[in-house]
Length: 429
Image (cartoon, rainbow, N blue to C red; front, side, top):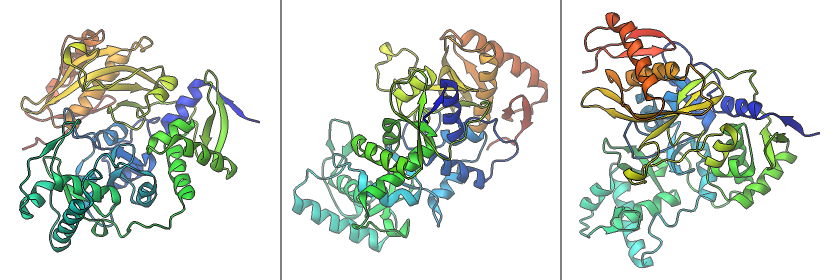
């Protein structure tokens, strides 16, 4: 008999699977805690936008609070690596154990050099691989200079300025022959041979069905509950093949068919998924957070319609440029357009909007979360602009918190605030 779940139960399963159902742990955040979080969510999307923080840093803040991003650099840069770069939902940090399976199912031919003449591409591949074999990890610009390549970069319809070196690098990256050893402060990849990143080289003998089953199973664990579309979207694998994989996983006992009241699509719950009796979390979510990857799922689960407006002309934006959803307990109750103004030491709330069913304490809880984020970013204050229906109450809540703790703060010291607990941290040089 198929189990029947309410929408609220489905939400709590999804939140628990994503590590967002509980109050954050107290005390310092350890590398082990960061590693457990990454193992739970399976991947984090990479994006160059740095309006608040790099997108792969934010999901760990959402789940763990004030943690040290250097932990992530160590996970991605020291052997044995706990994370590596490859294509997944989009460009992502992935768990190395998924690398071989993603090689089978990720086809990003449009990114690289497939359009080049074979002889031209092969010559550049040989030169790049020879340079990387003999030397240190290098960026595309460093390799271009070392190879003495002088070519006007080509602007394509995405606006990327990529010369042949960069295109062939991305082609080799897609093939799994080279990987990213690290990133520069300017967020450029430093390329190296994949064998120097993980002791796993591309293979041609992997069973494609078994490979996809592992990816869909991992996606289902990260979602807890969802549809074929949800699971297939997580690693951006084909929908039709994903449906076949779901059927195999049901037969294997890894997925259980369930019904969610109000949904009209076949839905499945992972066998390991927990359903907490309540959700108690609080988090600002990155626009690229894995909870909000699949917009249709987000709207069906939380009644929250969300579109990132970075690429929308300013005059046509409804909520702002870099808008973060605000999760409170088992609902997404507000959204805020944020900017970390590092020069002034301010976390700017450029707009704040409440959802129709937002509880009365939304502004107070959001003010505490913003202060926590400011402390994590080493910013000294939160400044709320008078834009949005929640802005007035939020500004008052931020001001009340600031007044309450003003006498306890050392000059120049950022604050760490976690559910009303205030602790001083050392000034940042």
